[in-house]
Image 1 (cartoon, rainbow, N blue to C red):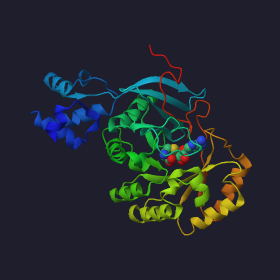
Image 2: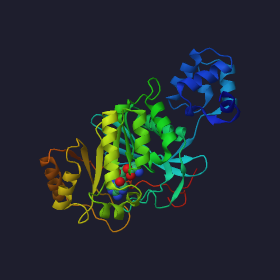
Image 3: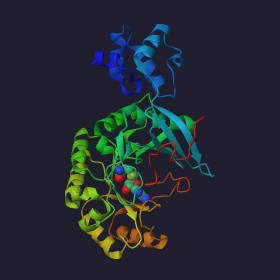
Image 4: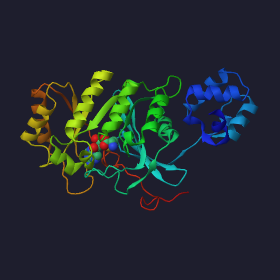
Length: 354
Ligand code: SAH
């Protein structure tokens, strides 16, 4: 494995501390050098010469065998009140992805993308509008957090995998990203402060539960019956609601982590008294958290439910004994809100370099 690692010019940020230690030892250096490099990797260093406590020949070795940067900041859009920043990153192949940096009372949170485009085609979401291009690499996901941290000039406390793409459709890279970002000494965001949002790829949920991570699994449900969910989210034709809920119950039993369900509030589509009642029946006896998301303008004919409708819906669910929150809508003005993030080319975004 190590030969393979050193002959190809891979990003050093793809490696975990054990792999890094192997590289360092195989190259004839002492183990503690790996820890020094590891600490540097969590900062935004962009060339090996910035790793000033390493001997010159080690820096030269790393420079010849590895690269460091996968992302370049193309543009940062800020809301007037500084609460949300949308960061547009350029990838080495010329594609673009978006990341949102959000400031809450309890600290900074970063919403990362996991794919360029998306295959899921949820009818209210713009992320897959230009189709699917490719999975992001581990370092491309990780650098979103590291560079956002540099922009914030503060430690990042929370990471949500809710940007462009379906995390469980890029399973291996996403799992390794979680391992790296939560590893102490580097970025060090505890797993309890990481949420992974999925459309509900049931095979991915079963694979994830085996790893017994401490992260929060958030499932985008958005409809309480199969007819409506198939209409809104094509993935429901592959795994229906019953299969999804069964997987989530098992996930809870195995990991002891409460599952969170996201429910986008679409006026006249899924926000009636009957819908709330069906949701209560669906979750009966299952201690879930429900997060109601006021719809942001996405694609198609959907309109957001009114404030009162959302509050009434919330109350009905709470009366059923469920824990319910309404997501704060941050970043609508700059298109950094849920379902508004998309990949784009420099031309379609009106951006010119230089
Ligand atoms: N693919 C994953 C993660 C990305 S989307 C998933 O679907 O869960 C993150 C969240 O934003 C999901 O719950 C998604 O359904 C929601 N979302 C998509 N479009 C939206 C819109 N127009 N308004 C509000 N939320 C939206």
